[in-house]
Image 1: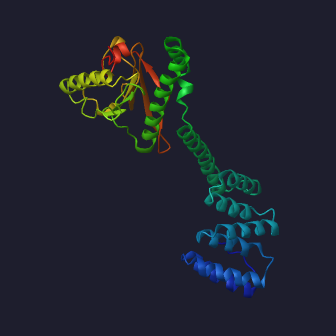
Image 2: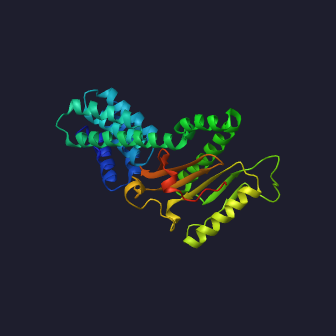
Image 3: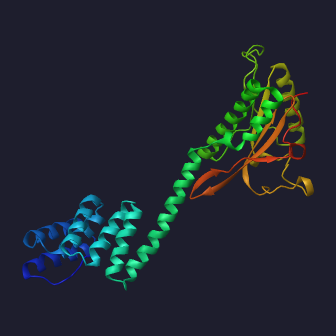
Length: 317
């Protein structure tokens, strides 16, 4: 709120008029009257402090900050100048700088509950801001390959370095595409991606992606889908396949239910499955999802026992 410190008669009148306009929410008129008063008394810190408060309400933050700095310069041991500066920096979302200003204000008035509340609030905002940035960095810098590094070696061992590299890249790209979709829409389409043979596959007949959104409605649809996909994989000369499906659409089979070896820790988590299929290697992953600071965040892929939790039976004979 604007200050009401006593001053000379002329300045007092202009300042008091400004204060009345400030109290009634007419911040532009208040700022204009404080400006007139400053012309009459340019070394009065209270006037700059009051105008800073009015300019803050008008969202003229750079000008408000200038007035706060002048207030501090004119009266460096007055906590109000630092309070004004902190409030303006907070509005600019410069939370670290705002916190520093409020801490100086508290040094000059250690009894101020208003400043103490501001510091408590800013500490939480700084913490939340840093966490939100961490979440955004995790969302933006998805590195699936790093989490599947041991699988890369396993594929190279089974198929040789070049062929194994192709299979690994196919799996990583499929998961990263799904993660990006999940971050943007909180969902993925139920699909099977095929790594087609460039020399043998009739690309005009066989597409690299097959939608399977109806596959998990019942045992009947599941069985029909599996039969179709197995035939598709064989006739298209696919080298590998990668199933992606959100957990939320699976009515059958609900592979996360059960006791003993069938029990797993993400039974109540949202997320999606990725099942990798090749003639001699099968892998199953679950990518759990959570909400962090209002953002959807995919967690690291969890490897599941495909013999226990498979979403589809073996596609390659």
